[in-house]
Image (cartoon, rainbow, N blue to C red; front, side, top):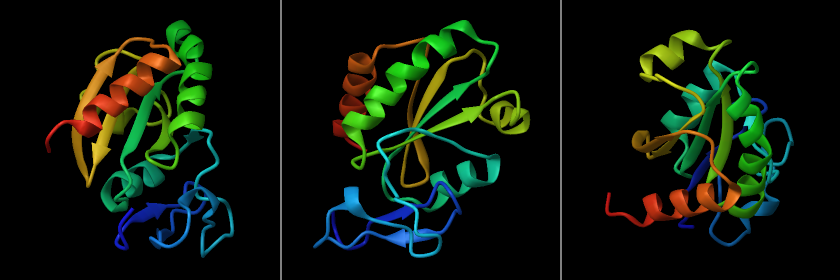
Amino acid sequence: MNTEERAVCTSCGAINRLPADRTAADAKCGNCGQKLFSGKPADVSGAIFERQIARSTVPVVIDVWAPWCGPCRAMAPEFAKAAAALEPQARFIKLNSDVEQAIAGRLGIRGIPTMLLYRDGKEIARVSGAMSAAQIGGWVNQQLKAPA
């Protein structure tokens, strides 16, 4: 990571610099003291979601899901395994489309689960349907290697 990397805390929404001379995996929020990367996807509010995609320079992988969705529930442990393998190279968050209907509508979510990948405030990829941890990891890595 270069010296300009920034990560948004999933707990309080504070923007944190990630110094190049320290490992991001051990970084803690300067505001609330929580670990910035837990290796587990964070279920976030709409406000934290917006802040993540707008202010983080770390790529953000979003699982748009709903509690009543069978494929979403089946994919949840796989998404968690992918987060454990790929954080802090990418941030993994979950957005409940039932709770955040306005955001899901604005994002054009037509089916769930849908994964979105953001880098530097822009959506760079999306895919719908349940995937295994290996498939999620492969998809994320392939998209991040693609030219911007």
